[in-house]
Amino acid sequence: FCPRMQEGEQTGQEVTEGQDMQPDALCGMTRESQRKLKGVGCALGIFSTLMVYGFVQESIMTANWGPDVKISSLFLVMCNRITSMSIAIIAILIRRETMKPVAPFQSYLVIAFSNMMATTCQYEALRYVSFPTQTLGKTAKMIPVMIWGTFLTKKVYKVKDYIVAGAVTVGTTCFLLLGPVGARKIKEGGEVATDTTSTVIGMLIMVMYLGFDGFTSTWQEKLFKSLDVSTWNQMLYVGFLSTIITSFGQLGAPVPKWDPTLYTYILALSLSAAVAQIFILITIKEFGALLFATVMTTRQFLSILLSCIIFLHPLTWGQWLGTTLVFGALYYKTFAGGGGGKKKNSNVEHQAVPQDDKDVPMVQTNADKTEAEEPAK
Image (cartoon, rainbow, N blue to C red):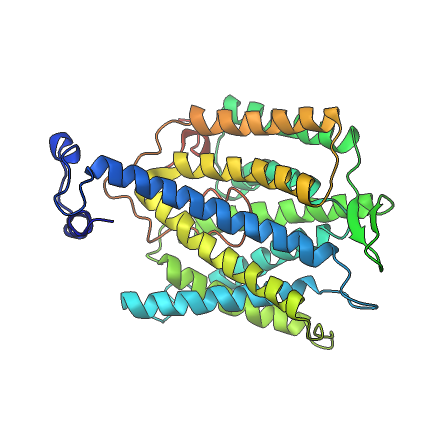
C-alpha cells in the first residue's frame, strides 16, 4: 500500500472525507480505494488460509497413511502450537514487547488446556463424522458460549440472540437427521467408504468440542478483559503451555513415520492456522467485527461446499435446507448487530486470541463489539 497511507496510519493523523477521496500522488489511488483493496486482501487471506486449513485437516484425518498408522490429534495440536508460538516470538521481537508473562500463569494455563482440548476434539471428530457435519456442528458454539456467559460473567442476552441460537439448533438438527453424516474413509487400494457405525461417538466428541470451545472464549474474555495483555503475549504463553501439555499426552505414543506428503500436510496445517490468525487480527483492527464475522461465515459455507466437491460428500435436500437455515441465521446475527467499522481507540492489541480454526472466534476489541455479543441493557 501507499507509503503516505502507511505514514498517516503510524502518526495517527485524521483523514477528512475530502482527503479520503483525493488520489495519492505516489500510487494514483484514493485512500478509500486503498482501504477497500486492503479489505479485499484481508478477506482473501482469511478465505485462502482457512480453506487450506480445512482441506489438509480432512486429508490428514481421513487418508490411509499405511497399515497400523494412526495420526494422533494431540501430535497435530502440538505441531500447531509450536508454530504459533514461534510466530509470536518473532512478532514480540520485532515489536519489542516484553517476553515476560503479563497475566497470572494459571490464567494462561486454563486457556491453554481448554483450547487444546477443543482443538483435539475438533480433529478427532473427523474420524467419526464428515467434514461438513463437523463444520456445521461448530456453528452451534454460540449456545455453550451463551450458557457459560450466563454463569461465568452474568451476561443477560437479548431475545434476538436466543432466536438465532434456536434457528442454528434447528438447522443443525435437520442436517443430522435428514441425511448421512458418517466419516469418509480411504481404505487400502484407494477405495472410499463412509463409516456410519460410529456417528454417535462423533456427535459426543462434537458436544465436548462445543463445551470446551465455549468455555475457552468466555473464560478468555473474563480473564483478559481488564488486563493489559497483548495478542502476541497470549499466543506465546498459551502456545508454550499447550505444547507442554500435548507433549505429556504424547509420551509413549508413536510419532508418525516419515512420509513427505503427510508432513507437508502437517506443516501446511500449522502454517495456515498461524497465518490465518494474523489476517484475522488485521481485519478486526482495520475493519471491525462486522466484516470479520461476514467473512468467517462465508468461509464456513465455502469450506462445506469445497469439501462436498473434493471429498465427495453428497448432501440431501434436507441437509441443504438445514445448512441454509444455519447460515441464514448467522448472517442475520452478523448484520443485525450493526456497526463493525473502524473506530477510534479500538484496542486490538489486547484481546482474545483466535486459536486455530475454531470458526467464527468472535474476537472483540474493547470499543468494537457487535450488538449480538453485548448483554441487554
